Length: 249
Image 1 (cartoon, rainbow, N blue to C red):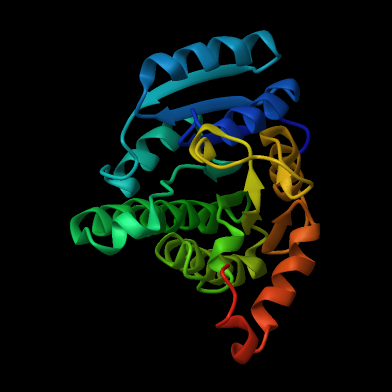
Image 2 (cartoon, helix red, strand yellow; image 1 turned 135 degrees about the horizontal axis):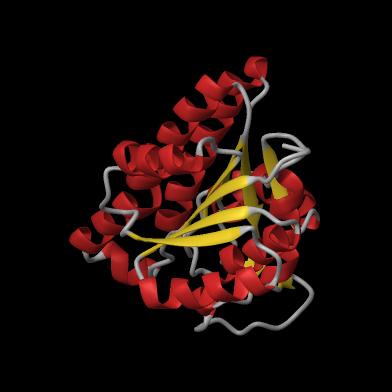
């Protein structure tokens, strides 16, 4: 992906992490396609990215959770000519207790976070496989590493997405293309507005964006952001059940 303008598609481009990552790529002179439901907000972001050095920044108004991923991504890439990076950055958090008693809401979250995301990832993987180049990046979560009473529905969708992306990475590895699942911990964004955001475990979107941009070029199929979450989640995953079941995690 060196020596030419990068062609980058961002799904869920109005999220705080996606916008911060787009700014990094804009400064590198990339051509960006911002896919988002909120077209007006995306247009504002696109204009800002152009001032920051983006070769171009186009907006595609689309609800990724409901769209035909294969058809829509195909149309976008046909205009770009190729796909260097596909970043999947959309998703919903939901309230665990509310979702437990609202099956329809739980099903909607699952469709958004996993079902639709899986189809976009598979569509992207097919293009990268044909090109024999490029990178698929998906934002997961440390919540997917072990089922915990506080967020196991959200965690299940992110855990499933992580396995999917790892499998795609294995599929693409012999061809020169890549797939990476990025697992942030606590991030200070509008999505976590209801949380108390204090302490060293909380990161800013810009810190996660730096990890995502780095992951587009190097690193393995699983990347924790920030990296200290790798050690934290190793402990959480391996905590004996006799102890784990007594925790309030």
